[in-house]
Amino acid sequence: MISNLQGETIVAIATAVAPQQGSVAIVRLSGEQALAIAQTLFHTPGQQTWESHRIFYGHIRHPQTHQLVDEALLLLMLAPRSYTREDVVEFHCHGGLMAVQQVMQLCLEQGARLANPGEFTLRAFLNGRLDLTQAESVADLVGARSPQAAHVALVGLQGKLAHPIRQLRTACLEILAEVEARIDFEEDLPPLDETQIQTQLQAVLQEVEQILATADRGELLRTGLKVAIVGRPNVGKSSLLNAWSQSDRAIVTDLPGTTRDIVESQLVVGGIPVQVLDTAGIREADDRVEQIGVERSRQTAQTADLVLLMIDAEAGWTEADRAIYQQVSHRPSILIVNKIDLVGDWAGKMPTPQAIQLKLKVPANVPIVPMAAAQRQGMGALEAAILDQMHTGQLQAANLDFAINQRQAAALTRARLGLQQVQTTIAHQLPLDFWTIDLRSAIQALSEITGDEVTESVLDRIFSRFCIGK
Image (cartoon, rainbow, N blue to C red; front, top):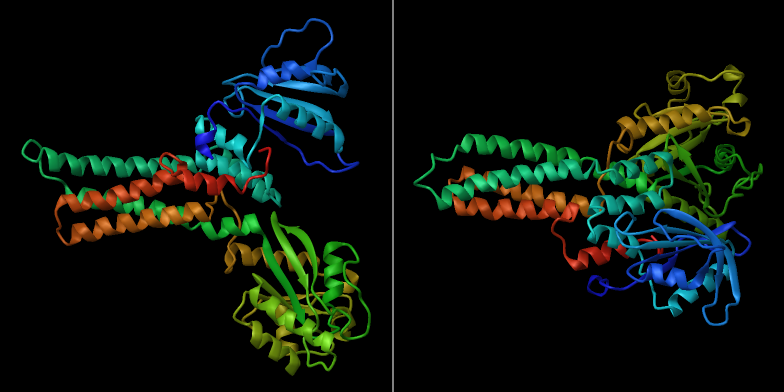
């Protein structure tokens, strides 16, 4: 893909297009012929100078028939002061389907090529406007599903991840220079201070470990938290989903086994996207359809990031509850004690987790949240418990300045391995030539993160995940 970029002008629709949706749609051009194509298609009233970073009003017409295609605005951004550092033109057309597609077709007929996914951002990277971490942050920002995910993406776009990576690479290069100098000019330089080299290596390794620690939390921010509500039939799982989503997503009746399949709702809790799954009540059933629903509930519980095990406060901690708990106890879990309002001693107030544990004999090693889901009581406590799991529990997905993705984590892991191997080499008193091999490996891995050294296949893989038009 990269070898075909030079000299080509690309075009794409840069906004979502749907019938009767959206008042404005944008067609974006980038490349050497962008301005010439725009001047062929776009006609402005009077005599206007085509200057960079101006907005023009006019009409888009067919170049041969002069048939009117759309009334539009045109944004002109000449190189190098543009997103791609090439000449960029944007037609701001009327929304919908026909106008924007006709404009793009005219651009294609004038010699532009349909852009590949992410090709505008790829050109920005190749032309030095963005490094690779910033380019990936663009995709993360477009796909952000929560305010916190958007914040982390914006921080990455501003270069906050690239800066420490480049500092680590510089530190490794300085160590390599010291070692290679002793190899080439051993007689002219004082002996290498191995203790100082080991101290420098350890400092770099500690920084690598700290950055690697953001990988799991960053993945959770990007993909969201998968939360499964499980429990016996008729304990209030669907009532919780409806109260939480503030909608009637799930059917609620007094009949056990009403929910036969997984019902899903997308929420945001503390800036983290949360996919909430209401599952069928787990019990032994004769009905084949209900049996399938129960089996899906068990599978969902095993793959969820967090399990909300719900029990009925009136019924207490039953053997059926205990059996379900044993199936999910290895997963991060929260115990929801629902229908608190129906228990005489607790009517009109929310008991403490300690009081619940003492009265119902529920497990003491799991967070307990009292609720009356049908009355929307206890929602704040539930979200607080989930956030507590994110902050201090096994989930760990909050308070991030930046977060690496899977590709960056894989490269950092290779860098860590190379640095650790250098330490082993020093400990075994091997020749300096062996030091340089692993140092170069670590430097290469760090360079891949920012794109200072990266293969075409890696770029193709990264930018193929982008939407067309970005």
